[in-house]
Amino acid sequence: MKPSIANTLDSIKALISKSVDVEVFLGAPDDSVPGVYVFPFHLSEVAIARRRSLDRQGQDHRHQYVIQCMLVVSPSTDFETLGRGLDCLQDNPVVESANGGCQIAMSSASAEDQNRVFSAAGILQRLAVGFEVRMGG
Image 1 (cartoon, rainbow, N blue to C red):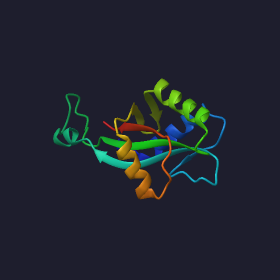
Image 2 (image 1 turned 30 degrees about the vertical axis):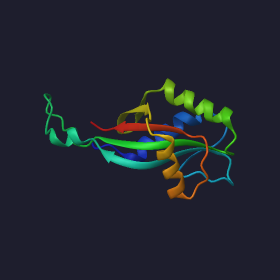
Image 3 (image 1 turned 45 degrees about the vertical axis):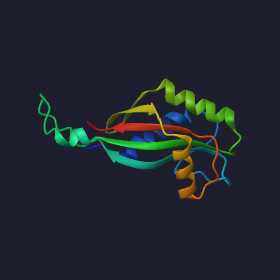
């Protein structure tokens, strides 16, 4: 079964919703709407998975992806909610979705990398939690 980006992100959104007491949104943060934002900004394919054809059980693992995301809050000073979202991500390294499971890991992106994402999206930089979602295969 091919991984579904939408199902995977919806599952992460639902998981975070259970840990915070504000609404959770998918997409770039909107400072006029309070809440937690799961902001996916980059999708890449796992190159080694593309080179493998079939595993020992005959399952196709060619479609493995990494979605780079940021967890952002509005208002930008709601550090308590951001902390609860971070705890949720760290406490749930594997998330089940309609198309199987995905793995969540904290991102190793630098502050400069995050600043570039904020600048490209036209968003004021703020404290954010960077994380990666590995899905498929």
